[in-house]
Figure (tube, rainbow, N blue to C red):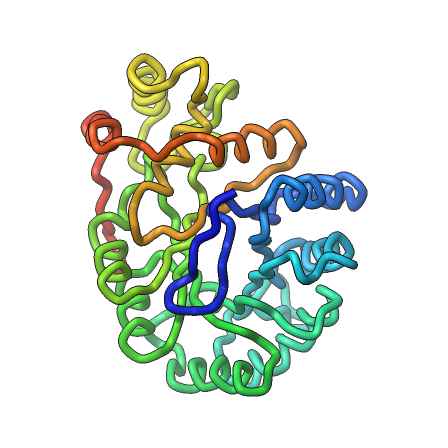
Length: 301
């Protein structure tokens, strides 16, 4: 498994990580998937305090027991459950971040987090205080590095100019190419890495899985036509649609890692097989861009 440096940091992450959100609540099954991923060279595990109300962090914590030195743990903060209120509230305040990290550390059963990420962000946040919270956590040794998870170019630009983030987690796939317009060029220029989430677009680009609905910017018939075009031109017996999609998300030089999810051993194996394949050629990348849409950001530009 190839390792890439995250920004200018000392964090080396596997080019294919594991998005843990889709592991589910079956602890035994989830831990088995994580262990197989680690055995196959994955070291980047992405979770969040939001997932399953913290239960996902707990499962990750159990899975890495005795293997902490093999893992780059990435988790997220900013969504807060307030007693007596339904759902989650957004809270990017310094006081909340400094408190929430302690709960994540406890659930993950570790004394430090490798990559702590703001789980969203708006221009109305107390951004200077938010940044100071992460910087304080770095100084105190609770986290090694920090980044943001955001699809808002206007928010990303602010953090690029005002903070020392090493990464941006952003949705990026063949059917969601918005980042190519405004985000990837900026981050490449600034030496900040992208962690690409959703390379398979919730299964829309997965092999052996027929979509039953469209995705943003693609009606179902358009999505099926795109899959047909990709399968006819670029899918081979040695490279499935799943692996093609993952290699596309990895093709941009700003992308350090992709984090496809897996809810079964079979899905994990399909995802990780992409690590054994060569990079896409410029001709292949051009062909993919010809048959897919060059999406653009409509909000938060």
